[in-house]
Structures are given as C-alpha cells and as structure tokens.
Image 1: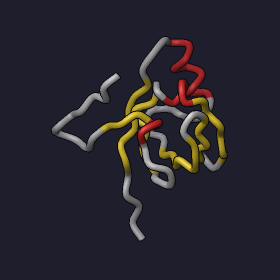
Image 2: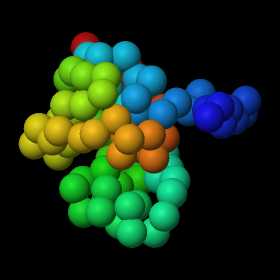
Image 3: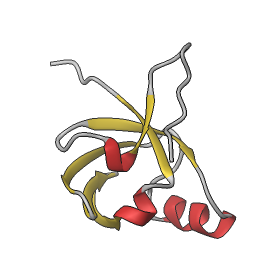
Image 4: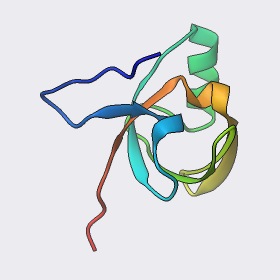
Length: 87
C-alpha cells in the first residue's frame, strides 16, 4: 500500500515506516471508524507528538508520557510527519 505524499507539506509516512528513535506528529488516522476511535483513545490522536522507541511487527511508542505497544497492523492506520526537536 503506497504512502500518500503531499508535495506542499512535510512528507507523511506510516508509523511503521518511521525510523526508530524519531519523533513525529500524527497527521491522520485511516481505516474503519472503530479502529480509529480506539487509536485515539490510546493517545494516537491527530496532532499528538509521539516517539517510536522500537519495533517492526510490534512497535513501542511513547505517547503523552506513556509507553504503548502497538501491533504493526494497527500502526499501518497511523500517518505521521517527522518533527525535528530543537536542542
């Protein structure tokens, strides 16, 4: 499934494609309403800043100060754009 690209803004990628150790802002959730609602309840809401700690088939992410394990299948529904934190 190709990742949508908006040439006028920062490139969006699926959370599964974000490199480990990088921070990103959630741009969009794709999929069934129930899946998107559950992701929002877990903290993966639009504009939330997250950090991908580890993972490929199962991801570990820091969201709102909490580490959350997420299946790769669920992470496919989350589109993010990388953010660069200032030192």
